[in-house]
Image (cartoon, rainbow, N blue to C red; front, top):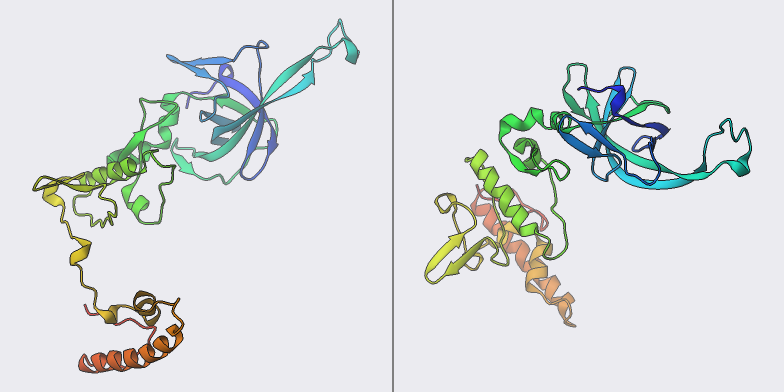
Length: 292
């Protein structure tokens, strides 16, 4: 990563586990400082932009998440030696940074920070080539989910195995594009991993719709199997006692407690009779029986 003195944009003044604070270097009051790296003009302190924090062997990549200003007095000069009234105030720009990961000695990016800098560490502006290092290791997967807002030419690639190996949520207001995002992710997933098994519960017909007698899908029709929920049959022994009570008994009725008691007895006899036919041990009402 090419970092020189000309890319220094600030210095750390506060270090916490999940946040770093830096004061930015100002060349001229009232003007937004711009650093040129290659053919890029980078606006220093822009929310969502990336910076590098350097101190000795420590090399951290961080994102600018907040910008504030603080009024301070200009430094003493020959004309105003120690005279506070004669020193003009000016606005000092302060950036809050969220550390994302570390650039290792071999030049690879790794998420997380295991060694933090101290106050006084240099904050450097970085260009698109350096930002791309965060996604280099996943480029070979071919799973691009979009472009970086601050660098539209950079594709953001993820590891689909890790992405779908844990829970994640897509959140947003109505009309913000949640359904489009889901469709785009699934389309890319089946393209990159054609053997993946994906189940979509489409309650509002957003990914499958009928036009005339033809059914249309948001995904390649050759790999989609559509199952109408109205045609599904769920055996009672697949559900627990509590689930069956919620399904069959109206708890607002005055006789609901009597229905629950009778239902518990009858259900217990039925379940154990069914289990006996299958050669299964006796089960409790809270234990579902599965047939594989």
